[in-house]
Length: 300
Ligand SMILES: Nc1ncnc2c1ncn2[C@@H]1O[C@H](COP(=O)(O)OP(=O)(O)O)[C@@H](O)[C@H]1O
Ligand SMILES: O=P(O)(O)OC[C@H]1O[C@](O)(COP(=O)(O)O)[C@@H](O)[C@@H]1O
Image (cartoon, rainbow, N blue to C red):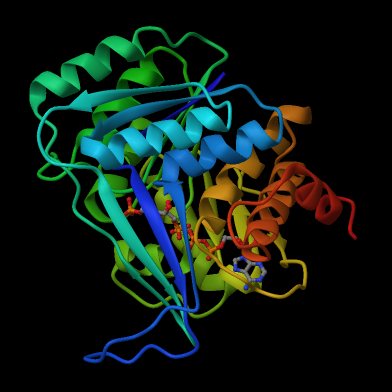
């Protein structure tokens, strides 16, 4: 079973307009609402691919209830814990000439709430994976992901960490099975520009020196680069297609990577599935369906 934790789920309000004018009233051409948050997106794709998954995390208010309803309608097992005050975020994703996002802060999660999550994590067993992705709850300790990944490492449960800044930095020493920064996030973490593959590979190796096992760097339309735990470098280009909406492409890549890895425990195959899942999502309005991912995997 692949468990995902979404500390800060969202309703993604995706609006389309030909041009965004800041400081003016803009009229949308189309609008849709999807459940979001990185872990939820990962579980959504895993469910599409037939890989057993369960959503963990926190929800609050009417938006939290709606997030839960939408994922349960989709048949995804969901154990979001209720937070009594505030409401889960509504993240606005604007598709105009460029993509713009307004991501909310989300409700505060107290130590008592976290205790309940720790209790849930007792249920995980060897053979399971845990995915920690997205922003932490308002005011969370930078060690949050590292604390969880560390405990899981002791229990032999591989963790995936898809986060930024201190949350990611604090998790590296817990030996996560996989970290997936995009190129820009890796540059932010290392505090320098990484202009080409050579520099990206060097950056990935530095994360491995700090403890990460596999480092997957996603590069948008330019594909992705993986330095696996044996030190081998895999570099794949993304398939060509018409980009529709990249929200959730990185999450789809994480899900595809895990689904591909579980087939034969082969990192090249995992990367291929990851890229195809990411691109299939980039070529669709919401998250990709199984058939679209499989078409790209077969090279169509
Ligand atoms: N414009 C695009 N064309 C084709 N594939 C894309 C495009 N944008 C993203 N992808 C796919 O999704 C993956 C993850 O995208 P990326 O934008 O790097 O992640 P994130 O959303 O985490 O920033 C890429 O490695 C690629 O496979
Ligand atoms: O927790 P964060 O970092 O604010 O990100 C949340 C957002 O990320 C998403 O999971 C999509 O992520 P990406 O666009 O980065 O792939 C949205 O569903 C959600 O609105």
